[in-house]
Length: 395
Image (cartoon, rainbow, N blue to C red; front, side, top):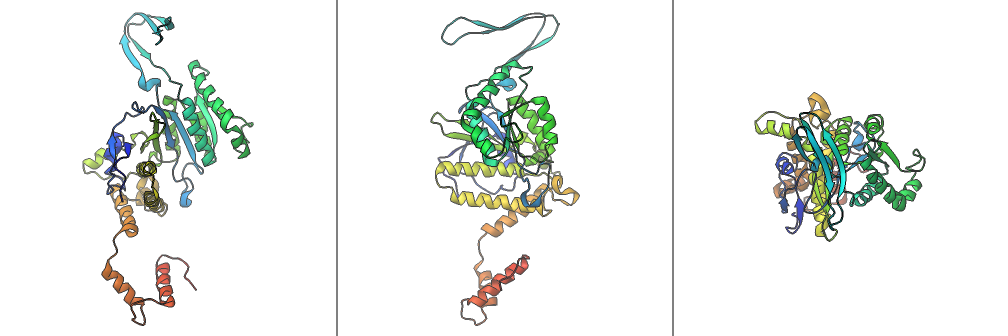
């Protein structure tokens, strides 16, 4: 099983490092890789950093912080992350905009600095691709049946009004009726709701039922997703996708575990220390990357089946008490033990069949020694396996 070499898959540097430590460490992805910055994708025009929030919600009876899915979408360009800055003394600061077409200059801000030491910061929030972000966000919320909220601090940061207006316009024109029909705005007065970022921090803690999505600017999204991760019990349950667009409109996606959550434990691992990391976010990131790459290649059925099997094995391990200690407590597994456990289960599904063992199995149930199994003999074999796994037998 392999992915086409023609597929271009962006991979974050930290992701490449952590791949060696996750349950999928034995896989070889035959993809061209290149590195990108944490919050920008300059060669493709970053659109959004999507957090596939709170994994394992209600899966296999696992009870965590939220009972239903929580989604988060973060505008992954501009803002504080692309700021210019300097430390200066007393004096005068003027921020001037010069039009590309050579028109008149515009003074954005002008102020006098009276302190002996001042940090001066300049940044901007690009807005052209906010409609693209809005389409990603609202379509995902609709698909996952969650209620959307747009988060800003526009009551104080007046320049964030444009972000809210762009999101609202896309919603009203393309999605509002679908959300109304789905009953997802019943508790919102039938309208898309805006949340001040201060209020969002409180609702993330209060809305333990889940079933909501939030879209925010870059910095607010960074902070609020940390809170979502902690409210859901572990940063390891969050995975994120950085989405950009090629010139021809094809989506380019980078997949990673949220916020580089395993850096400290990874260093401990390198130093031979025992760790107990929940790697679900990293595994989901790799699964998402493989599925997206195979989709671009045009025939993803084999990859889709394999990655879904891997996901199910990981979920069942965690639900059965074979997860890492951040989920299962002191009786949980170390990171390495968890990796080995998942690898062994995966090997049962995709491992090579030993012909000699198959011959022994056939002989054990081939009562008349004819080299084949009758219906009754086959039923006895199936019932044996069902009994071993605690399943109901065939009458």
